Length: 145
Image (cartoon, rainbow, N blue to C red; front, side, top):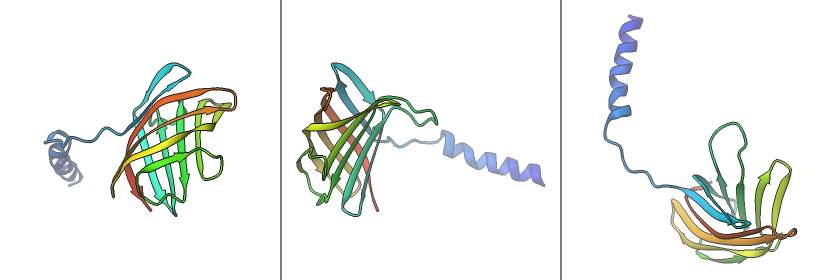
């Protein structure tokens, strides 16, 4: 009986694994960090309690990979607009190594489009030690909590 259930489960899973696939959007973050181009294929955006968090990471593994980019806008109204990094309500960072987290000192985030389920925009910033993050772009599914 157990073998029959396993065979039935396998038979029903084939259409799910090999059937028609819908084209999924490519959520990602890209930026030039100190004149080196990076593309982070995983981007997440969460809007919760008035705060928008956007994160870009290289992979889904348990091992941390670099760089990682994090952007935060506190008291975001849900609409497109430009926001200046101020260290309080608009924050950004670029994690280059496990001990080097570059916090945004100067720069901007521009939300170019925001819908009920996706968000896109641009960003650039310089850190206190002159690390430069330029040509930043993101596109992400937007989760609202």
